[in-house]
Length: 145
Image 1 (cartoon, rainbow, N blue to C red):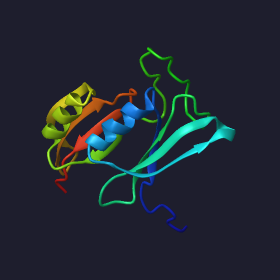
Image 2: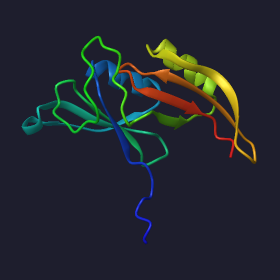
Image 3: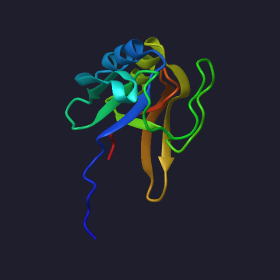
Image 4: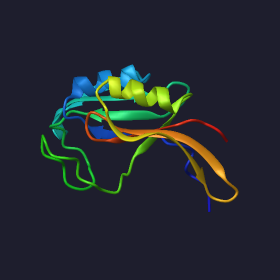
């Protein structure tokens, strides 16, 4: 069987506040790659934000966009509904700094910076997690392997 998967291209989220979400991810270091509208899917605003040094992106849609989604969409002030997508993870130089920067940009704490020792042989992981502006879970992990 051929190996057809070569990497992660993008993870899509639907923003409660499109412009605030774009600013949040740009402040975390992502760059606008492309933006568009698609009226036949009620997409007024959409964008791909590139992760520097990769061919991976975060795709952001406005709150009214009619795009494929898993689970039930959260109401405006509702805690996000759990589904199959658990979180997405960014490799960072310092998980503590990334965590505090994200909080300063409006994210909320999920798991404060910590060190985990996983499996056998032991793999040491330094990470932190926040809830983004739209309830998405973002993990920051330091590369140690």
